[in-house]
Image 1 (tube, rainbow, N blue to C red):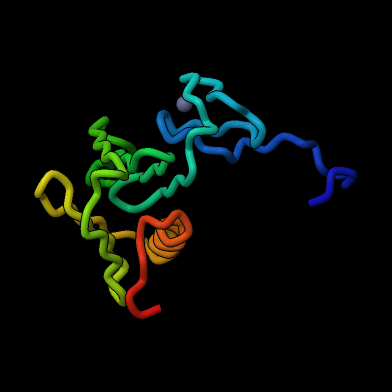
Image 2: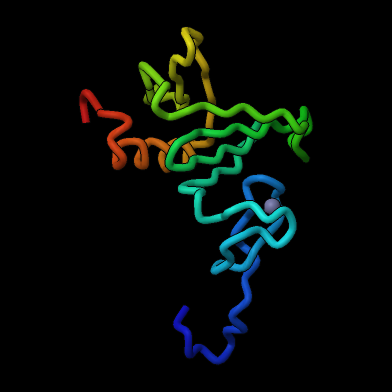
Length: 131
Ligand SMILES: [Zn+2]
């Protein structure tokens, strides 16, 4: 939509804050509710069992409850530099890696899996053996 579109009111609260889940205007630098720096988020994925935030340094999991309606408050943070043996389980949309000697597995929706995989390739974190 162009800026001079007459129907464009210019306010879209579709930039979801990864930390508290509130919608923010697209050009917001900090969350209007919790003041999180929104510019540090590279990718934010809302999935079935968790929401996943990717920043330049970390991958953060916000766990959701059994009914997938809200978050449990459980948050796991992984430093990207310490993630080893990253695998994208084609054709199953599963993403796994080894962290501190432990294997972590995330089953993701197809579109989230693809977004995360493409970003990991683009940033050099993951290389496809058989592209
Ligand atoms: Zn927030």
